[in-house]
Image 1 (tube, rainbow, N blue to C red):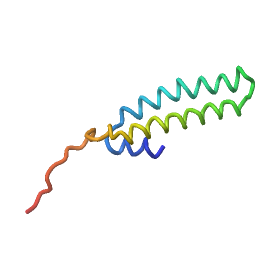
Image 2: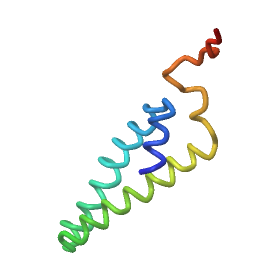
Image 3: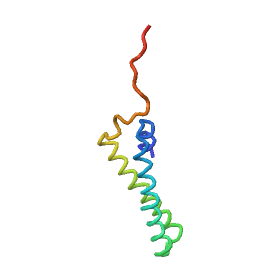
Image 4: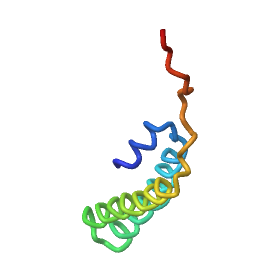
Length: 84
């Protein structure tokens, strides 16, 4: 979650948003449903699905951070400091 917040602060907010939606709905929900409901593990299976989602999303975002693809995505323009 620290990487996601850091990316948002750096101005790269689209990638964490898309990864959050895809991983939460695609991975967390399906894994939680399969383990919790279909396989009969109950709440423990749903928790395992949520934990799987967090771990996989963390690794994806960490790789995005490591490759420095977020550089240059700032939403604030850099201006030269004003000197009087």
